[in-house]
Length: 271
Image 1 (spheres, rainbow, N blue to C red):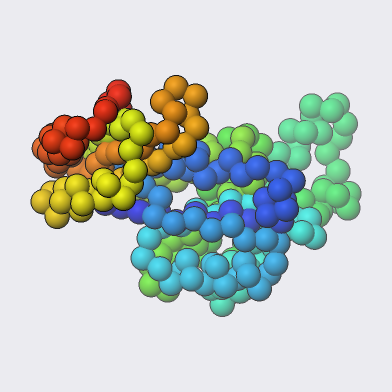
Image 2: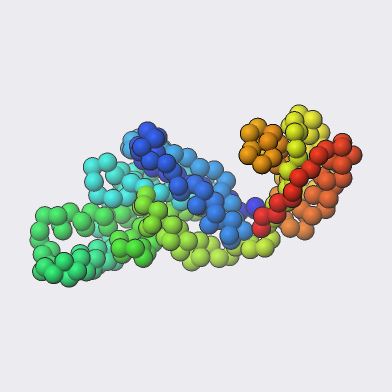
């Protein structure tokens, strides 16, 4: 895929194994649906120095980056502060974020049948969730109205910050892709075509893979498995790239496998 995105996942709970990350496969899926791809991903714990360094590198890069987690207002949430430090700017309460947070608090009070008390300490504290680096723009949150935010680095790279909760983060990421990057969408332009090769060894297939990549503008991939419940030991061997380049490359790949006498199973096509 010609346009790559980056992904930063923040949270000690991922590194400790207390929670399993779900963002990586979902972000890859959201991108693939639009003909885009994930170029890299990084998991960072709740450490300000490491988060700031990761964000500095993201802002200095060339691709858009998504950052999931750590934008709340509890003591272990550092991402907003680290984003400001990485950009060298101050933090400030975003006026529209403050309005949305107040709207959410009023909604909750109404649902509970109690009066809205803006001066109550916990309500005052909630406004911290709208304290973003100066110059940030908002990402709407359809789940509870508490927004995420986007910032642009000095070189033009954009980083988009969303909560760690999938129920909030995923529709927010989809919104960013469909509002900010429609000019990059390439639905139908990208394809993967592969075949299951039974009992194969990667070393024996490497010359054929190199031959295909040298002759065609595609990437060749191999995904080995030793204990698949249906195919046993096998390799999923395929090519990926622009649709018009994939088909002739895959045809040549099949021809090469037949020449080697390979035992082949089903073919798989992914748009």
